[in-house]
Image (cartoon, rainbow over all chains, first blue to last red; front, side, top):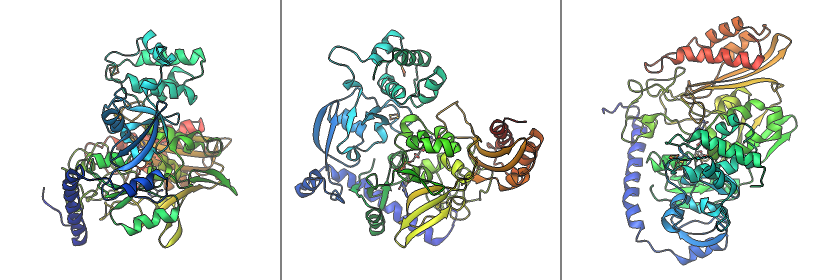
Length: 213
Length: 327
Ligand SMILES: Cc1cc2nc3c(=O)[nH]c(=O)nc-3n(C[C@H](O)[C@H](O)[C@H](O)COP(=O)(O)OP(=O)(O)OC[C@H]3O[C@@H](n4cnc5c(N)ncnc54)[C@H](O)[C@@H]3O)c2cc1C
Ligand code: FES
Ligand code: FES
């Protein structure tokens, strides 16, 4: 593509940025070899403010997932989704698009539904996370899990953990008062298999049951 | 995703200093736009400065103004009692944006600052003057179905994707910012800019200026309001065209009116001429049509988006009909 000249300054700045990007691409490979400076990790653990990771260093993170405390050291770029799936073997939460477009990665942070693929792990310091693995009480399924089985709210099941986490939040938020409202407030969860009618039925059923979720 | 350093700050000054000190640093709020763009390789800050601990989440009345902190979540604003009562148009626009999960993460400041969804901007292998000045605009003669019909330049025909901003510009809001040179108030109309020769600049913020709040005056426009968003699916899609309409209706007469359009320009597009025309006139379909014709005066299609030349005025008329219950 021919370059349209639109000002020298901007081109220069642009070249700089490109250089920076390439540099970053290379240095992220080196990061794997980096050693965590203990002073920094310690500062982070002590909850000091205005603290930084060293150059691409790992950072300390304490996080509660499904009632279990984890004290971890992670790269700032690790998303909550990758942290759970790749480092903590919590693979119940699914990666669909990895760009906030499908809802498969929905989890609760301090009780609110969010997308774990667009959440940085380091930003979850001190938070309580609930995933699909944290819903059942021993062998007793969560009412929303029961309802999805009863109403056949899935086919392949890939979107289901996200749908269930989202459905619970939808009721808690008070946005499940009609099928129409459920459809609108569940629109962030895409189902490639098109199980939508039964997903709505499952959520409406749990809502009608009136249990505290 | 590229790697980067991470810094947590808890004061406005700390946030501003961190950005001024380091030219490769960038603030992160909800992260819903920035992390996406970093994963795509469109943006590559070397340091993220996390501003979520700043005390900027409050939604409150100050005199007769509604003041919304920059870190208030989109869902919190949409569901807030004060907002729903006094500025329901804002609530409607927020609810029309993104998904429940994203609104639980996205902040008011981040929403205003979100980048265009132009596919050429989003793909580092494509030419785009906004991403890489001087490489040309791929959309100008390319796939431009989602693109601007107002105020574009031969350097860029991208649109600003925020729904919330369409309501805020209609409601005569003011943006409160704090930067290295002190505090500043920016009328919402002057916050975002047209592409001109500098499409890389989305808005009029200077480097290091942090949005701290948005202020909405009490404009008595809380009864007859509507936000109509036309999109490719019923929910969870960006606007092809959207209209924010707020009318002060006295009987059949339009005493006052605010109108703005989304999905049509590089900035939230306020429709002053149409407003002026409607003021003092009866609310009727004929008048709505005439106002829409005025609004469309300078519109220009680029091929794939020519349908917007028809869709936009129709959306305006429908929004006014619903807002007023007339016509
Ligand atoms: C799948 C999907 C669908 C979407 N659909 C819609 C839609 O239909 N309508 C719509 O309007 N939006 C939509 N969005 C966009 C969404 O609204 C934005 O991503 C969100 O509002 C950004 O807010 P944030 O707090 O997450 O910003 P971040 O991603 O944290 O930040 C975005 C930018 O703002 C800057 N920034 C953040 N806070 C401040 C501040 N206080 N002062 C100065 N700069 C700041 C950051 O440095 C960054 O450059 C969608 C997003 C996704 C992923
Ligand atoms: S994987 Fe997070 S929204 Fe698709
Ligand atoms: S059940 Fe297959 S994607 Fe939803």
